[in-house]
Image (cartoon, rainbow, N blue to C red; front, side):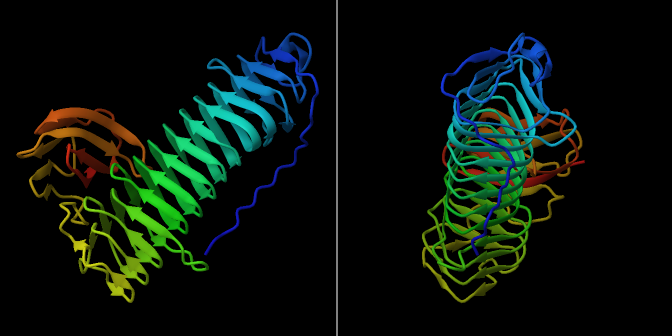
Length: 378
């Protein structure tokens, strides 16, 4: 069922006819003249921040700009503060930590750190090359991620292009998403169009549903790899080509259409545990070479791929007979890549170094295929 995402922010957007420039000269309160060496910037100014500037009340603007350079930061005081943009531009190469941020129109870029403690509302396009954290993220523009985005709740009502790491507790896709690297969620509902492309890796640590219970037009194209640790329900259309794999750790049910030629593997039966829909003759079951829910605490043999020891104390060995390994990634349960290495040989030994204890995904890429498995670092 499609859900509504509400965002409220108590801030006035004020226009300015002639833009003036204010550049920070010292750490301090936004509304103190000493922070700027003179006049305090008001909405419509072109503001350049090279120091730590603190908002002590909400701020909004519909013209002008805010530029935070790498040495600068924009933070709130002890009370939650909000920033709203309805025109003009916002560029961050430093650090921003505010309770609420809303971008209704204009332009925004982030190559630094963007921390929204409570809510981040995006109605415009963002090309993220930095890091973003938001407890509640709503996107109705085009969000392109080339680095890291994490948080608790993520509602996509626009277009999402993920080229690196995204991890949230809950994700609801109500529009269109493309994944070309790592997505990690606790619970995931696709009620729109979702492309898990050939290099895409999707991890769902709890339950996953593909379906729109109102319009029944959800469509999931799975050409990469998907791990669903608990239950999976397909209500609408699940599609994919050879090379695509889906692993389900507990119960699986199909009430819609399963199309294409990808490989599906359910822990208990191999195929769907419940099926009252249609399944294409091209679908294969548990033949994709992936690890589907063997004990996470054991050495794993996947076709000609060996991963040992498991659990890991000091080092991990990955061996692929007859084929050279192109790259190896280790991904945490939040979808963050903590290790990435070009290999170009049949075997690699990975020293643990400072990897914390926990469950991780190991993604092994060759020129022809990707493998994935779970390992435990003690």
